[in-house]
Length: 385
Image 1 (cartoon, rainbow, N blue to C red):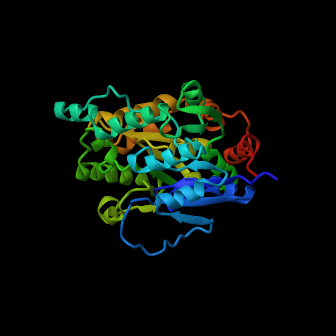
Image 2 (image 1 turned 90 degrees about the vertical axis):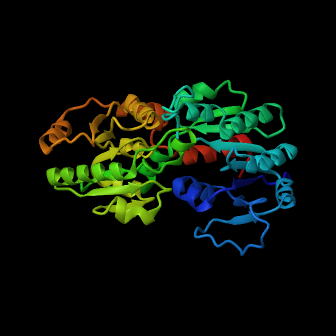
Image 3 (image 1 turned 60 degrees about the vertical axis):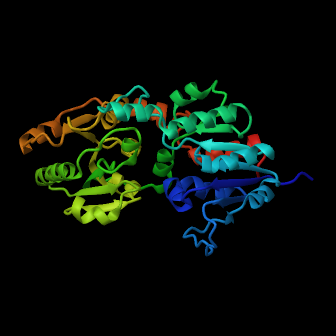
């Protein structure tokens, strides 16, 4: 009798955050696969004796803190669902997977819309030089080289939600297979069945003055005082105009100690965008993957832009504009109520339907959970029960 194949969900980061980001997938995996377990990998993260971790979720989870513990685990017949990074701290895991010939699958959760051009330049010559030789970029190249040399285990199957990504990665030697599945945002629409209403205006926070990606890419973020002053003034005008409250869906990494200062007049929630976007009459955003929720619920979307945004943010905004053809407002340009109302009433031919077919339901199978499609592939291709 053949040994049963385990599915190990390896995570070196925050398991709770990963579950919140893709709750339907993990609910589906643990309900439809017998031998599945989260593996919380924290090798060399600390030499101190740590108290046992208490998880708020109910999924079976084991902790791995040493290489020998990881080796013992990987000796068993298994497939790895990777929630790992490509940072050096996780290279030992990919190396061990190569030694024990364990196949790795990976889901591209966030899509391909925002990909800042490697040729984009900041205003600072020094920052541009630092950016070109940034350790993170060099490490990414080194990871790719080590994978191509066969030292680190490469991804066996990449699950992607976008047709453009499948075409892009089809002949990429970093992956053995690329398979189209429906988006997690579509999963949430089917699974949650939240009724669509028009109770609120919802703002999707991008953490504009605080987001570290800008700094890592050599760009100076917008001044926080300027940004929140003008953003809150815009919210007040919008609420007076529409008689609806603005609800702020905070970025997952937003530091809530800043709430009173940044959003003094608004209800602000974290990890509840799938609850509030269905209740929106209007969704405001800069650039964020949560725009996908607004698309699947067919909500009116307006991008808030500014001439003072750096090129990093502006290019990301343009990427979403090009993909969806949504309306835009310069929130800090001193518009009055009448001018704002004209923009709100203006008919914009959006590209929601074409985007749905290429980036949300790209598998071509409407009504199917992307999570179910992953489970089916794991069973049929890898023999997981």
